[in-house]
Image (cartoon, rainbow, N blue to C red; front, side, top):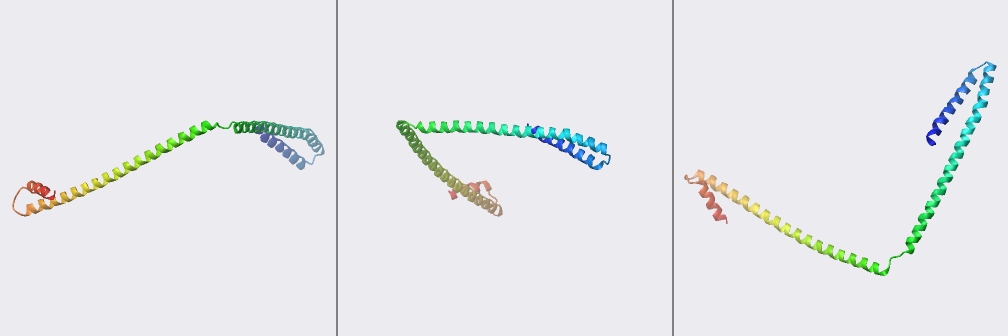
Amino acid sequence: MKHLTWPAVTVFITVLAALATIFGLTDDPAMRQQILHYFDSIVPVILGVGAGAAAGGAAGYAGGFMKGHATAKAEMQQLVDAEKAQPQPDSVRRAAEVVRVAAEESHHAADEALAAALALRAAAEEGRAVADLQRSLLTETRRTVSGASDGPHTSGTRLGLQGLAQVR
């Protein structure tokens, strides 16, 4: 209904404005009499539509209020019923036991995760140490190979292997 109300109001206001404008611009008494006759026919229609819209709005409000009141009353009754149906002590004890067991399992899982994190940290430190050792071996090998190319002509591969054996 609200989708029809605003266009209808707009049309009625436009018609009234047009009639009022024509009435104000006309000097002919016969034309003014005819426009007043239009006003006499249109005003009761507008008042009827307005009264119908107001009655429809009031009926809709009353219906919505009654439905909302009934729904609220039903929800309150459900809350009262739920409050009366309190859990039995055995079910509360069982639920508490389940929660306690779950907490213990989560603490155990947290301890295992901590141990895994510490092992991962130790592995990362060992990996860093191996990488540092490989870097130093590579540097030593390059130094030995570059030193061998300046001196007597011996195999650089042989010197590099000897440098590896000495570093270990």
